[in-house]
Image (cartoon, rainbow, N blue to C red; front, side):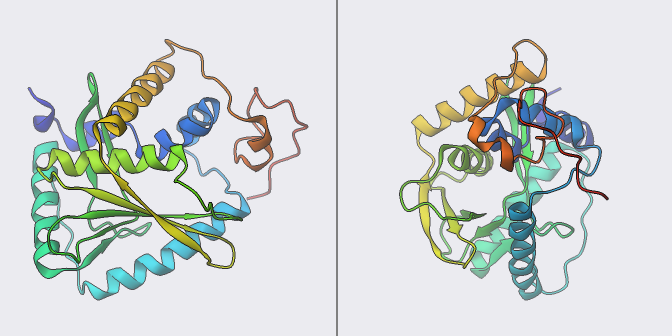
Length: 249
C-alpha cells in the first residue's frame, strides 16, 4: 500500500509538522518538548500570543471574503491531496487568497514521504492565488524587531515544507512570501523560491528531526540567549537558568 492509500488520520498522527521543523532549527530540545506537550495546552509567550491574535484577525477577514464554506470529509491521503489540488486550481481561476485560521481550514499541505516512512502535514497561514498562474505560500512572522536582511533559516525551512507540498500536487513554479512585521506592524516581505539546494536542506533537517524523535540521536540545545523567550524554559532540562513557576491557567 502506497502513502496515498494511507488513512489520513493515521498519516497525520505520524507526520512531521512544518512548524516543528522550524522550531527544530532553533532548538532541537524545544522541538522534542513541543511534541511531548502537544496533547496538552502549552502556554504561549506574550510575543507569540500577540502574533497569533493578529494572524487570526487577518485570516478571518480573508476567509469572510470566500463566503459560506462547506466542510468536506476525506478518508485517505490521496483523497486529501486530490481535494487540495482542486481547491488551489479553483482559487487560481478565481484569483483569490486561501487563508487558514485556528478553527477554519481552507487548505493544507501534504508531502506523502518527506523522510523514509514518514510524511509531512501542515497548514500555511495563507496561499495567494491572485496572479492566476502559480500559488504563493504566505507566512506572517511577528517579531519585536523585524529582520532587515534575508529570511531566517528556520522560517525558510518551514516555508520549504509547505512548498514541497505544492510540488507534490504538480505545481512547478512555486514561491513563498515571508511577511515580517514588528510590534508596530512595520517590516517587509522576503521572497523564497523552492530550489534544489533548499529541498536538500529541508530533507536533511527532516531526517535529523526524525532520528531525534525516534531516540536514535540526542537533541542538541540551541542558542542559550533564546532560552528566556522559549515557552518550554520551565520544563527543559537543558536550560540552566532559574525556573520560575509557570503562569497560572
